[in-house]
Length: 300
Image (cartoon, rainbow, N blue to C red; front, top):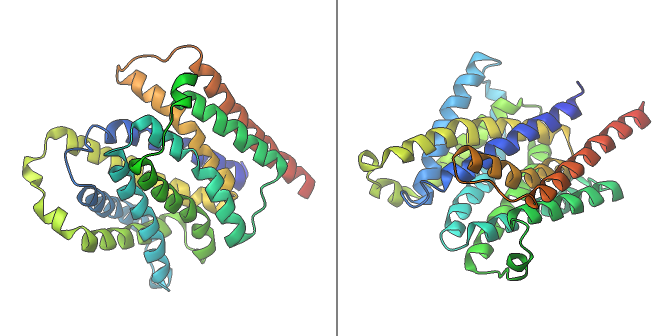
């Protein structure tokens, strides 16, 4: 399997893990301040990734040259998570998910400015099909709901967070100096955790940690191990092997994965028309994969 195909596989797994964080994260969002939750999430995930790094290639001093790089990346991703929770305080989940589908387009634009990565006509068509399919899934095949979509304060807040997410992806490739994904993720998590601890210290100190309900710790465990530590490594790896627009295109699969999570949690099955949107997102990803294979043949 080529590095490019491994990058696609990494993002497929990434999208399923992120979808789980939406389902489980919504269960704990109102139980703890976003800054406190995200700071602990980053700190614990840094421990997990740090141990993984020590058991593999180890952590070397030269891996942390120019530490400002980690502050930039950690700040961007920390901003995304914090703003996501703040946005969801007032934005309906459907509206927020619609905003999230703008991330691949923003990432493609940023990728051109930072790395001069060009979005081909085929890739642009795939992104358009995937975006339309994701919106169809998000609005549960309800055209009336789509037509009534309104942008409020929560959506604007979350849009800024999604912009941070979109910038983060091409910045990984631009700032990486040969560090492995695990080591680079560790540095990013540590830097993000430090920034969040400083910024959200009052919220962290005011949180009654011993009085939190059990669901918070269950949700936090998932967020730390799967939605943060594992997804960070997967995203870092994919960003080093795929153009930014292709990496972020996998966000179009998140609504479909969320539906599967909701079914697994016993929250109902969507109507048959929603499956049209799921098929469209799969078609978009197939187009991207085929485009990757043809490019490889042309280079050979």
